[in-house]
Image (cartoon, rainbow, N blue to C red):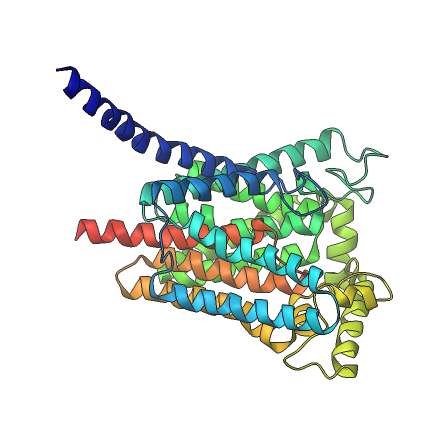
Length: 422
């Protein structure tokens, strides 16, 4: 009896550990996703956040338990890895040729984490986990917005605190500490509540306030680019799901809204900064009134000049070198031009290939029997992502790619459930 007890006990403990570790890993992953928008919670000047720590811990536990999924994007996974290889080679060749290999390694490592490692961590073969991850990220963004809106009206700008929740120009920056970033992140996350609402996973009395909070936050940021990408998000998602009945309802709702605003509203109800930065440019038709347009246009002109002078084709200047050469000592806020200048057309093609592969994956899921609403969420997120890139420098922060991977996970979850029902 003692021999039996001695031999079975280790197996019991081993089985217990095997059951416990996946639960621990999921809890770690959920924490990482919740903290992802809080990029200011970092360990040092190097861009490694508290959220990244939890993601690394999650990846380690996935390896230990043997649960890492080798093809999260199915047959499109090799294409996604080829896209990263092009991006890596383009940036590194330019960096090596211009004596800045350390900057090349740092920047490409950041892209590796955001575009490849997170793909293996976030896209799961478990529908329940996919829905939870999307809901957790959504809750995190809603909490950030609510905190920002309350701070905007109750406290306002606090002098001397550096980059605060509200800027000195009375723009809402939220805990992301950047008005344009806050607006872009709301637009990029918006397909998630739209998808959950369209599929009936959240009711109208939850979805409508959430969408209102997102739109209200974008207005308070007074971000022109944020208003553009939010509008694109709503238009693209609606276009994918449009039916005559839906379009009639939307036209009726828009008509009522216009009538209410025309009868009882006034532009004075909007924040003063929004009236100056956004409505001023819209009403006058003068784009130079739209916030920091002049300085950003100068950066774009610098980038185009550098591409022309250096005759950049497939080999660029190297990572971070455009900023070094800039009169404003700032990178151009246009990722397409930035990658072309620093990594050549090789890096630019690699980065754009990510979105192409994502779209192909979405259509493949749809063809395999996936839901049209999941395809709408995936394509809308990618379109918003591509548009946001027009107004931003390097996009390797994790919060840029997480919404894309979460929507891919939602698409796969819908496909799994459809397969079970059939």
